[in-house]
Length: 628
Image (cartoon, rainbow, N blue to C red):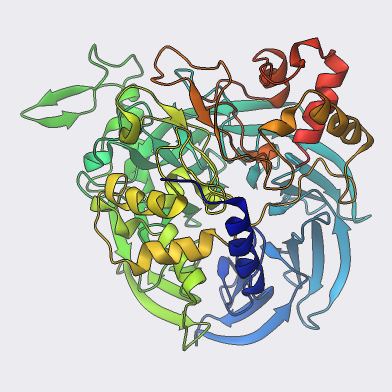
């Protein structure tokens, strides 16, 4: 198909700009027509549950006995997480308002007033108090660090560097260890082992280390520590990215899991699947535990349910399995066609491991997030339904439903966001569009898609600006993003859906805008990046990445980077917008940094003298590219 003329694309873009923009970046822009509940926090006596509302930037105080909202507290935009102060008179709330820094607001509950505001890092998404109440830890997702805040002076005292997109923090009851989830891996995608990691920090010495999860573990959402301090639990997708995407049955492409960490030894115990044999539990998100430590709870954002797991039975089974290598076939052993775990290495492949110790509770709403447990009940915010579900742990059934927006009606864009995240639309519910494209971006993995033949895996792409920069796919195999969305339903989700659903995804994704880069200084290029901009043009990077249209010429180019598995030498020229968050780089993800891409990969040598750049010039050029 002939590419759209640039003038026509410009006209399309003008139309989009004239329309109300309700999903500017899918990370932190609010759609104020909705509440967007994302987190529940309960008081110690169980009398109240506080619900953070992302889109409304409000906190709802809910009386648990009547299940009614008794107060709403305004917060600065955009509200991302909340906790209660030790005396429960104040709420500590993180807010992200790009391109400004992130903040922690201390809010008096009785008056609803913000008493003080503490600057932290870029886009904070989680916070936790040390048990002594003197120190606050804040995960700053896009400055890739954790702020350490002294609560007496109300000032940040240091930053702890992490690996990539720290998204959740939890501290052990004794206060000795802080656990931090790194949302995505930072590995060469063409390697054998690609996995996200959990960072641990000794709170006294600030010594730190990393706990690597199993190969394929990505999208680490929440970490929580058991009440006795023995275990930490992390929700994650367990991608089977080394398999060709020929089917989804029995978790062929994606499985869904919780990683269990020995909090005392600071090491991984195992990764346990949350799916059933023929029914996936897509996109695990929140993880909580009852106060007695006997029940583990996991919310599934893609299948709109909560898993209630007998933790005692789970630990007993895990501890009874001998530690050792996998069987020769790497599949465990089989008896009469039934998979049977024989070593600890078999556990992440066993879809029946928690049979008999888990109940799946279907919820009446859509998009469960971070839960609160109190008084024998679980309070589950449902993001897309603007509601809160209540589960009775005694009956293991939903017992209540609080509608924050009683007559909820979804715009096409909001419906598109819901569809994009909905694992129920996949055959056997194994995955959603967001499984490989979290927040409409990329998961850092190489996938072997069938649209360009078998055996040539390529790195997952961010979908940002894909509707404005045809063709799509690294091989340019799809004429445009609209075709890509529809093919995704057919060939990745293995389902046939009504046209209104892919059309809604088009409406949602086409409104996306890039987040401002953390490399910018007060919203502008740094001195280093300004020098890099000059180099960018000098070595003719702008030939393939012109500034006037998302830094792409929308053409196929041979840049001498094919690998032995490729069946072509030319690849689509990608946008450089948000390249700071789309590592690893090249069509096969072989480089983890832009610096390595330029220095080792000599990317761009066909157009200009990239090989003649000094190390300092490479650093300047990379700074500019990472600022886009």
